[in-house]
Image 1: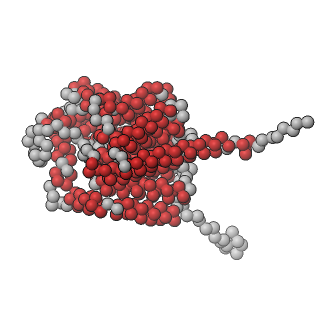
Image 2 (image 1 turned 45 degrees about the vertical axis):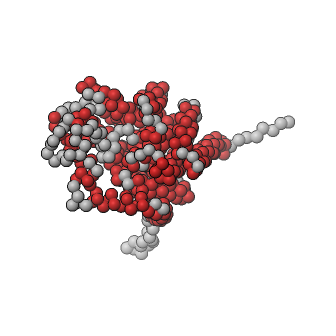
Length: 469
């Protein structure tokens, strides 16, 4: 007689989830190993070779991700982290090469449009409304190609959203995404700084987005779920190291972004003791990384001192950004409904002598270098109102979720995007990566994620009759 064993569902139930978590951990460790080997090889080979191999591998993972969501999410993370360096160093010719990642994410958006249509979300609706108005603005733009590229930068968020939605159900996905992106941002930055003198000039405001993605990925991981103390320390350490790279770049706009992100990480740490542990460990690691590059540290401190020096001209304190912003205001005054999507460079070159604007790049087509200024000048009152609606929608969603992590995440995303658009336009993948991830987390926020409070000690009291209450 053959006996049949009975299986306890309570014991057997979690097994598939555990197996998926183990496979995800192995896959993520493989990604980390490949990244470390590739950038470690830059001790002997050109950085562009390592970047090429990693970009090709990340695209393969993104394609495989159409069937295997976690591989796709990790591939997307690599692409978004490396995009800041790969685009100016590798993809230097032709419309298709410049926009390879944008076109892929556009294809993913079309392919998974039913999934996006089922995901009804206020943030997605606000972005769609903004993009529709930007598309209308192409009708009177003198530079339609530039306007299309500007729109494609924002459309990329929908493709990212597909990857986040499909991988969200996998336990540990957010943690391992932060590990891969944090390591990649740090390793890429170190490799770049080592070979910087031998490479073509790369603006610090561009390449520093690589470690920025690493820091923002840690914010998403902290907001997604409760982490063990060991994982908190690891992610906080990676965030601090990546923040150190941003500091060394001298990019003041990106430094403001990571400061907001680090503050959010501290707020989402469960208790005061863990807060102090994470804070001290992160500060020590960040200081240790920065101290290895004294020349870059001195350069960054000098730039910050100039920015804070009220005796310097506005042009020098902001590296010309004040002139561009004032020029955008003059363009808006002449075109209250917008000068046309993509028109800022030409409109700037036509401004001529204006009150308050110095001779900075006078008559030369210049980008706005600020999403707020560009939107105001090119898309007028409707455009700026729609952009404000989109940016503030994250804070509103976090407040309505009534969970501590959701509230911190919502306000952090709104603050990061608001600060980021002061120094960058829509082409930066870091801001859209954060927005896509936060959109998924806020839609699935649990109301029990509240800020931990000290335990109340129950005291024995006596009634007026002397009985113990």
